[in-house]
Amino acid sequence: MVRKFNEKKLVVASHNQGKVKEINDLLGPYGVEAFSSKELNLSEPIEDGETFIANAKIKALSAARESNLVSLADDSGLVVPSLGGIPGIHSARYAINPETGERDFKYGMRRLNDALENKDRAAYFACALSLAWPDGHVETFEGHVDGILVWPLKGLNGFGYDPMFQATGYSQTFGEMNPEEKHGISHRANAFKKLINACFST
Image: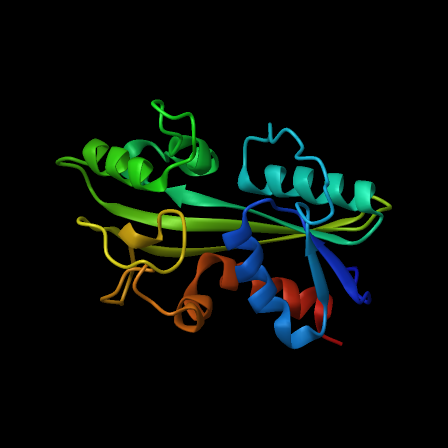
């Protein structure tokens, strides 16, 4: 039996403000007051899972236990089959610039484009969403969206690898789409619909 969400407050277990804003936008219609891990000064757990689902659970359970509030965590990334599935669960780490030691998605996208020379540019974004309660109960949902990786980069919207990802059936990258359009088709929106239908709908 799927557990329903009946609270007024929720922790978004992320220190990534782009991701927090996107989840907050999606939660808007449900009257939920959302706080980020950063706002609550929660620790960042070690994500040592081998799948998006495993890492989403680690983050959600850590935030729920530390805050004593229901917590929602997302683990998502870009998967390129022709490159053996990279960057996958290491999507954020893949974008760390060795010169600065900082996360730099322009560097990450350039690195990915170089690796794709003469290879199939098909890719997909995957997302796992875990909703965790302080007692340890977890509900998890997955979504994904297929597309191709384009070069040069296009658009300044979104975050991460959005400026090089063009979803199947669309002529714009996620970086060119306005937030509402992206929310309608993204991997996160996909997983979110499943979460809402299962845990938020009466």
